[in-house]
Amino acid sequence: MSDDVKFMQQALLLAQEASSLGEVPVGAVAVLDGNIVGTGFNRREMDRNPFAHAEMLALEAAAKAVNAWRLTGITLYVTLEPCAMCAGALVQSRVTRLVFGTQDPKAGAVGSLYNLAEEPRHNHRLLVTSGILADESRLLLKAFFERLRAKRRDN
Image (cartoon, rainbow, N blue to C red; front, side, top):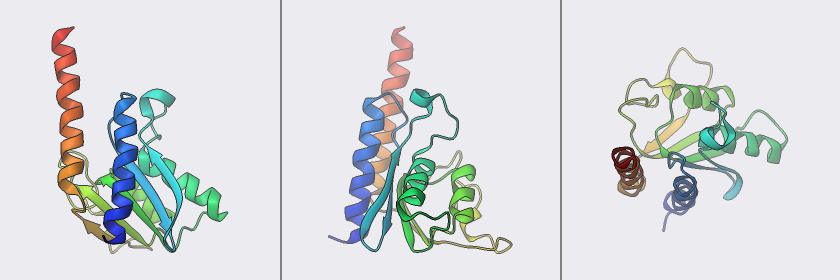
């Protein structure tokens, strides 16, 4: 099994935890030299915080772990393509590589709507790999939103 698959499986476990708590199922894992240095899952509802995206929480934990805001050498694994806020944070924190599961056609900022990670006008660009465990990531999101819609219909 490749490291990309191994760490994306960890991100999927975090996404499942988010889902079980009623959060949009997105999980993220920050890795440096083969070791997990930060994790996060969506907590916007629980924390009542618009910034509590999985990526932002994993980056914050990684920065604390390495005691630096520059996250050079970090690979971030996330189940869903990052939004503009999170993609901007990846650029600003100098993350080296992003690996994500499924695309986000409504808000994705690393290829779907925009490509902030590889924008030539930025002072930093990331290496990007997409589609790792994409089906698993997509199915988790689909099931969550189907349950949410069914719950709304029943109320």
